[in-house]
Every structure is written in structure tokens, then in C-alpha cells.
Image 1 (tube, rainbow, N blue to C red):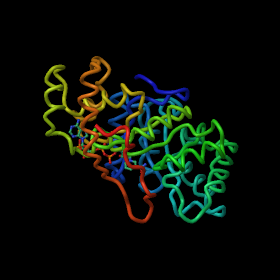
Image 2 (cartoon, rainbow, N blue to C red; image 1 turned 180 degrees about the vertical axis):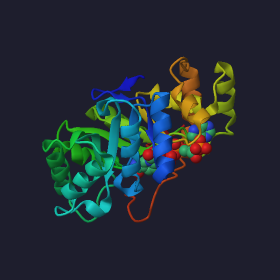
Image 3 (cartoon, rainbow, N blue to C red; image 1 turned 90 degrees about the vertical axis):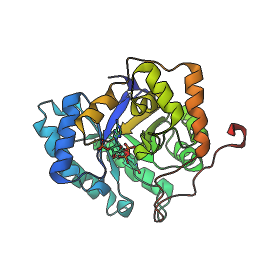
Image 4 (cartoon, rainbow, N blue to C red; image 1 turned 30 degrees about the vertical axis):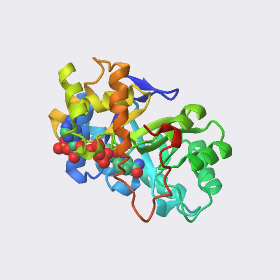
Length: 279
Ligand SMILES: NC(=O)c1ccc[n+]([C@@H]2O[C@H](COP(=O)([O-])OP(=O)(O)OC[C@H]3O[C@@H](n4cnc5c(N)ncnc54)[C@H](OP(=O)(O)O)[C@@H]3O)[C@@H](O)[C@H]2O)c1
């Protein structure tokens, strides 16, 4: 497995939304069996117990598989934050996660307050690293100012159909790992001709080419699959390299700027593409 950034997050992680109960457990067991070493969950997904069961039954030492979980927006207040993290750890059956993230920027609580709680969770040993998710450039800049050097990652929607270049540049500047969720755009680009023709060149699938495009930019990808063949294929992206021209050709698809995840109750005012980036 290849790793990204100074906290060495696996280049390809396994997502668990919207899997529940035994389906979630079986999918995570399958993923670990295939070689995935990073499992992404969240309080909101309601599957931390199932993920915990899989971690215990997979036959590996608990510290061999990295785990990310995320604090739900409803747990951002000081009375609920740390107890919610304690509950997550109990459900997962581990003393500490590798990455603890704020799932969405809070609308009710000041960023300084939620970051302080996040940092406190880390000081208590509840997490090795801390980070955020769905933060815009302005919010990430502010987080970097409030907790310099401490934000390990910003997990955001990232795939060939969305233009996240402003955020990507900021992450690079700040030494923050950009983590890509919906890395496969939930299947939205499978019929794309550019991706299909590049896939043919390497004898790879469209999904593999898209994942390769992501990790070749130093972005950590998270993909979910319940199917053995897909989950195995999504991990098999380390034996080929896209040329500069192919990277550019796939990059041009970003013009579509299709965002799949933007829940009205939590979504911030998203960054648009930068003027200078328009192709
Ligand atoms: N931080 C956040 O706010 C946030 C938001 C959304 C998601 N996430 C995380 O990111 C993870 C991934 O995102 P996602 O699950 O929404 O979307 P995704 O990974 O882009 O897409 C998952 C879908 O793609 C299909 N698929 C997987 N591999 C495939 C392949 N090789 N060929 C064709 N189809 C394939 C899967 O179907 P099969 O099961 O049939 O293979 C599944 O329906 C989530 O599970 C979650 O952990 C985080």
C-alpha cells in the first residue's frame, strides 16, 4: 500500500457509508482481507459498532488498520463533543482512532470552540491526528490559523467531475492532506469516453483510472464497494502511471463541476472554481 503525507494515510481507503449492521461488517472484513488499511466511518453513519466488529474479527492487530471517524454536527457543543467521541471509541472497540474529523463545519458553534474540543480529544489520546471535512478554503485557512500545523486532513468531495483546485492548492500550501470522498463520483463518470479510452490503454477499468488520477496528485482517495471484484480492483492502481497528457485530459473533465453531496442542513457556501483555472 502506498501512503500520502507526513501522517502516512493509505493512498486508497475504504468507505462505509451507507452500509449498516452485518452488511457493513462483512464489507469491512472483505476490505481488510483484500489489503485495505484505512477504514472511513462517522458517527452519522450509525455503523461504528459494525466496523468495530470487523476490526476485531479480521485477524489483524488493531493498530494495523487505520480508522477515521467524524464528529456529528449535533455533537459540536461542549457538553456532547467529548462524550460522543468516547461513545465512538467504545462502539469501535479501540482506545484511539487515527483520524478524528469534524464532519461538517458547525453553523451553531464558533470554529475556535469546536477546534478546541477536537484538540482536547487528541490530547486525551482519543485520536492520533485531527482534521476536518467539508471545509471551504476560508474555513480551512481559519482552522490553520487557530491550530497551526495541526489539521492533518480536509476530507472533501473530490473526483474527476468536480473542480477543487483552489482547495487543493491551499492544502498543499498548508501541508494538509486532501482526502477524496466519493472518489468514484458514485459511478457518475463510468461512461465517460476520455476515461474509457485511457482505461483501454492500460487494460484497467474506468474506476481504476479515476483513482489513479486522484492519488497521482498526492490526494488520498476513499472509495466504497460492497462487491469483491470492485473493491479488489479499486486497490489495484499501483502498477501503472498516467502520463502528463492523460492527467490533463482527465483534469479537463473538472469543468463539469458536478457536486454530488451538499445537504441543505450542513453544507457551507462552497468554493467555486477559480477564474484562472477555467479551461
Ligand atoms: N465526509 C463526508 O461528508 C462524506 C460524504 C460522503 C462520503 N464519505 C465517505 O466516502 C466514502 C466513499 O463515498 P461514496 O461511497 O459516497 O461514493 P463512491 O465511493 O464514489 O461510490 C460508491 C459506489 O460506487 C460503486 N463502485 C465502487 N467501486 C466500483 C468500481 N470499481 N466500478 C464500478 N462501480 C463501483 C459502488 O457500488 P458497488 O458496491 O456495487 O461496488 C457504490 O455504489 C463513503 O463510503 C464514506 O465513507 C464521506
